[in-house]
Length: 209
Image 1 (cartoon, rainbow, N blue to C red):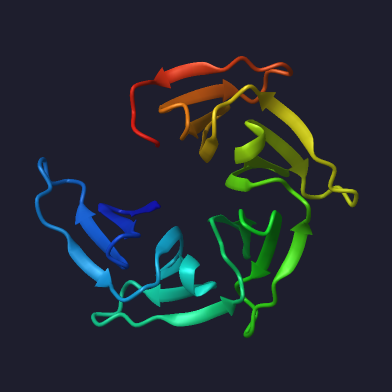
Image 2: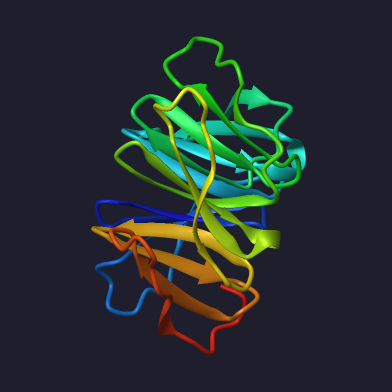
């Protein structure tokens, strides 16, 4: 995962177990700084002011670190969870649990955050994006994007677009929802204001984005 803070791009390196950062104003970035090391396979990242939230997926926990600390250390936020992706919405960290087929959340303002289920029995939830009250969820194994209205007490999933090829991460820019199709080796997009959106290829020929 990656998250941008000013000119600093923070990157989770699952192979080395590190969070690194680089300066995006450098025309040819050649050096990176290790922010935090010794993490058991860091995946998802989210930034709230100076707190960087990290999924240590193989340790089944979410940790955080203060990026303004000259010698950053990690603190456990919640344990017993394999968070594939997550995003911040107000004070809630919304989490996709790919291996448990759940979407859950925690309130990061709680002294001891408690994991709460948002949706259960969701097949292979991966990427998340939010637009107003609509939470978009990529369902990797079902090759589709679905959504829920998070204010609706019934939390009913509605299909948005099907026919994808391993939809992984999501990114929303205005009305355009960008989708990394990991098994399709491409990035595609849809217009979320279209009641029957058509997939448009943005870039192809990638390697498992």
